[in-house]
Image (cartoon, rainbow, N blue to C red):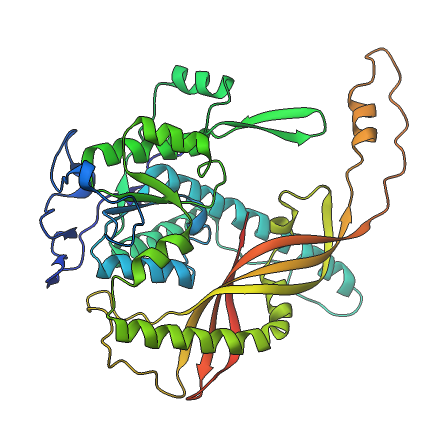
Length: 432
């Protein structure tokens, strides 16, 4: 069993004071207590709920932000769009909370992906040695750090990100197991029934439930309203979860990353900066669209077959090509140090600079897929106990099929003075 991660505990924020709040305590002005050490019912920072705007209104910034697992899937690395959100929240003195349940899930996802990559490397190295055994001698050992060292390094990197962005943890809080079981049996949100294979159903949602109830419990204590939970999870954005939140009478909305960013960034800058930056984003989008076909090979190298196989019927054997369309949410990410105030209206982009960029794009992957023969699978699994096992039939031949995904891109490009050139893909995250 994985214990609570120490790296998600409260950390000492940066020591800088400003008109918008105090980094000495990491709390917006007037909210001097530690976020994750509040007693139940603490009323600091409390505002009149009846007069509050709904979350993500145009009239008021958020009181608090909570993060689900999916915006942080590349943790401890951050996509450019996540870094941009963190910077906006820092400038606006909006606290960002990460449930301990998310921290645990992120670490185990990372370790599983490392094990999978190591196994693949070892298999490929074995094939290479066999291929070259009569041609050339190569080393017999493939050096990979032991899993314990990798986990320690992961936690150090996590601690650095948490400290840099002053993220705060919140403890796990969930109803009794009996209540969760009752919700699961009744298929109440966030639990849902899914088909894992033809004729076989499973109930999912335990991790979502733990994260959601942890957020609700914490928000009911700190009362930093209005609040948002950033998630791409369809079940957390469902009407069932909305009804559950409404029962608690808490002004909490579930939004995706782009929605929260759009709602916050214009609160940071004056109109002159907003207009100038939006014009730059238009230029970047124009130049990026012209270069989009050239980025296909880089994206193919960045997206793993296992990521494409999720929610795909059959086994993905090979990915041949990718076509990109519907480019959107294109932003340059100008990030001064967290201690600084936002860039002034006199900020100018210098020619020759490489500029960080975030963007969203739809991708259609041309893939070779081995289809699952459900009829053959059922014939073998559900034969009468007394009969002889049937002879396996020849598998269905592989098929060329199209797999559609939405990609979050982190890129950079060089600014020439009037255009952006030499685009390079840094990271790709597949949205599900």
